[in-house]
Length: 154
Image (tube, rainbow, N blue to C red):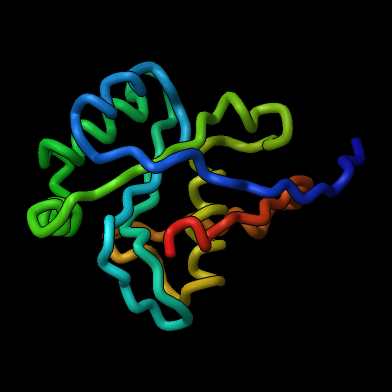
């Protein structure tokens, strides 16, 4: 089966304050989420960005809401996120995986890897609070490529 290669532009929704009242409505939603600083620009090797972390929820039972709540309360043990949150307010945005299912033929874990590796291409390293490497999803024959609006986090 031949798939048609396509490029899809990814734009992010309005940022939300990283606080419990904004996290709760995301229970039951699987997808990617992005946690970023309200004002601190991280100097990455190629460019500056306020993006601190790219994460994912692979299923509704461990939803974006659950994962963000774990980061918010410190249960995720991501010391970097906890410490950034202690010095200034953080924001987040997310992508509901249901919106991409028709154009992304792989698992949500592969989508997270795609975003992380695309960030590395643009900024030179992984987001500062990500402590795992992206699987090399780029070795797959991917029919859908994304043009990600990383300027959103400037």
